[in-house]
Image (cartoon, rainbow, N blue to C red):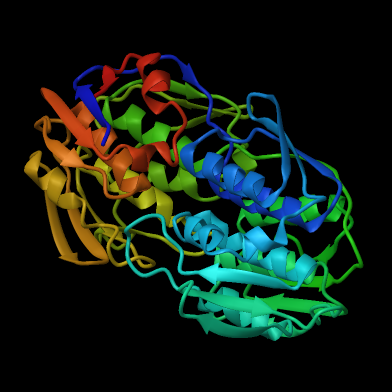
Length: 437
């Protein structure tokens, strides 16, 4: 198990550019299975989860070429369907959360797909009901394969999925992506209400349209898909990762540093900049860049009636849950108090025990809520030895360690590498002191 060794207390300065968006990359790479023709995708983050998904596609028979860093071509014209039905394939899918979105394309194009219980972060239950119910609504049959420990979805040979109206039980991003990719090759019209409408779903939709799909309502929670016989090749460029953008904002504030974040796609950040402003962080929009100026103090806002500020996650255009861990850490050195409410996952706040050991004042109310009482930089966090439980908690602990007094060690950094490309090298270029152990 690898580790980061972090010498804390060094201020940052300079310029950094966010990687391509991990969540979008996983969606659009799965979508290449919908056509026999070549698809070119640019700005792919070369992180562990994405590399593993690409390896999974190569094992299926997809021809993959790396044209340059971050730019790949995919051609799924000779899929090994026997391998896709194998226990080995199902086992590999179970270890990779993003692989759940292979089911929709495989079912739509080949008439069958296995759907294992997904792996990934240990952040609590992550239901797959929305995915499976959506496939059933499109006419798939299902049974549970006890030997492979996975659901087997299929339609009769020589037939297609059938379009239908569906109201999703939750605005699941991966569920919406899966159903959308299945529906584009279904016969007739599919209406998906309560669809997720995050920028990454919008990006997937636009890529599918360039491939020949017919999708109306892009950007809303009501998608209408008119199925087509087949799709063709296309080119696509992935957005900057909004989670990295927010992480860099948090690093600058936690270390009272000035930082310029380049090419952030500001129009696709939604409420993220305003959420950090509520913690007292000044942000300047400079074209498509964000400048975070150095501040000696960050004052958390209160609501207009004087009550304690609450920052909670919500479906888009609300705040993404992936940034709550970062905002919680930043709040430990602001002035004032804030309630962090993580609604979507019941285990994502348990990493705060590490922060409390470092001297942070945090009251964990229950698995979903924590009250943070900020130190206003009058007390520097202490170094600590800890393990990264998931991607987002891992980056939050790294931010805390970068500001702490002394040398911290974070183990299980494979979790961080799953979502952040060369993060130690990129941060060291800004003045951090991080080595791999």
